Image (cartoon, rainbow, N blue to C red; front, top):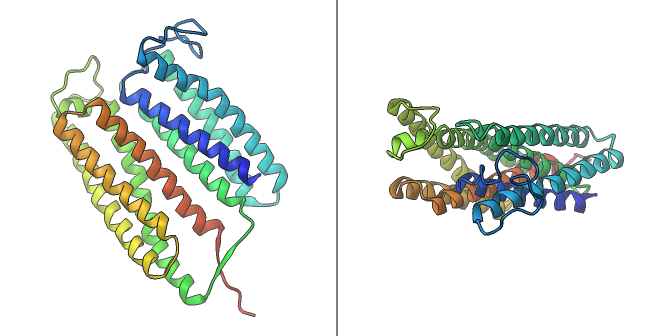
Amino acid sequence: MKKFSIVTTVVTFVALILGNLVVATNSGDACGTTWPVCNGKIIPDITDYHVIIEYSHRLMVPLLGLLTFINAVGAIRKQRKNKAVLILAIASLGMLIFQSGIGGLNVLLGTPPGFTTLDVTFSQVLLLILVLLSYSLHETKIELDRVSWSTVSMSYRAFVLGFAVYVFQVILGAFFKHSRASNVLLDIPAAEYLIRSEGLANVIYSLHWVATVVIFVAALWYVIYATRFQYHRFLAWAYLVTILLNAAVGFVIVITGNVVLASSIHMIISTVTMAVGGMILGGYWFKLQKKSIA
């Protein structure tokens, strides 16, 4: 069941990447308001890359739904006495339903400004839940002595703080883009606006960068302790590197005027960061344990 859960998580990751590309390339309206088919056709016009991106994402959704359902039911049947598995499995089904509903409404309503923020939020949370579910199915534990456990717990608290701020930053960044606040700040014309105030756009943008500083400090703290005490070293460095890449690409977007390529890369890196963060949390919660005293 653990391997199937990993496959489901990977498919979810791919679906999110496609979803991010839909948003970054403004392909959300490429298939019109007919859902799940594209412009009323099962086989649409594939000469437009916007149609290819949007329809590929739509075709991925049913597969993701089927895998998530099988994964949740299988996990519950196999480890129904494990409370963490039960909660995460049910949460994955609930989040999939919410995310699918929001995605469908987004299409039917014609992608209103700001609404896509909900789609991004539920998608990222679904990925996080599935990563944690995969780890909750681990049966092999790593025991740590009292000193090591104390150190891990201290660095873990710093990581959780930074990761919580990161999740907030992802939601804030999505709102900054999809409310068209980014267009206001960068003087880019848009058909519809949710936020027109330059002052409010600056506040959101400033909060986004303040969050980046907090996330970076927490990630650096975690890397230092992970490297020193030899645990989660690869994930710690991967998390820090993706944080830095996120900041660098975000700076490029501001300098270049929010170009499609930079925006797409930024969203993909954000999804990778969310997955890595979930793996770190899963490792702490479900693989590490304090060595019992004989």
